[in-house]
Length: 212
Image 1 (cartoon, rainbow, N blue to C red):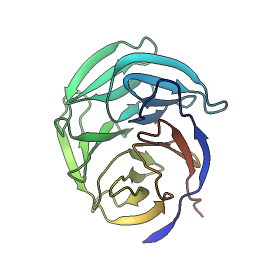
Image 2 (cartoon, rainbow, N blue to C red):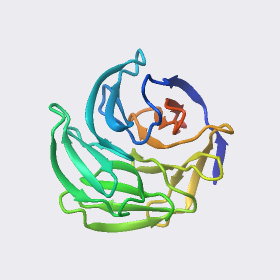
Image 3 (cartoon, rainbow, N blue to C red):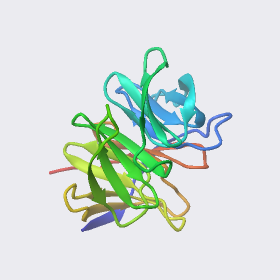
Image 4 (cartoon, rainbow, N blue to C red):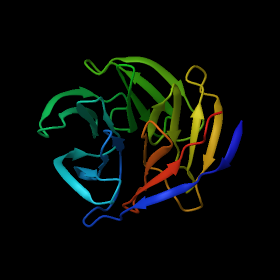
């Protein structure tokens, strides 16, 4: 297993009125983060909030190219990104113990925090299609270039880890500095991960390791 220190390349926030950052996603232009009762879109070029949607936003956030998906307690809401309207709702697999959320290959991928699991979920019905076991608490979840990564936050320590999507084996680990927490995770599809900073109320950009 390859292990190295995470390289933080930029920090956004803290933001006025935001007590904590939960889920994080990226729509190709803006970084969206969940802050309890709002979804906020940050311009990564200047670090300012460009737009907010009033919606329950308690944990993971995802984007499928058109819609935002947001965990709200024990359910996952599908939201029209243009209007902010909730279109539909499915049950969350952890029944309220859910954390990270990602969209990949037509499915939602949902972290179940204390159970140390990631579920592949049908976005229409909420049916669990398969489950991957992890070794630490799961916060954010993201897929990039066929790699499954998730964030951890346990015993006041956090890291980003790439795991084998079949076995859950840790293949690579990026350790965050002491006291730096990860509460949400998303890739920009390139060389950055966006990480929620928990009760610090901020978002960090971490460099994704280069591939030969």
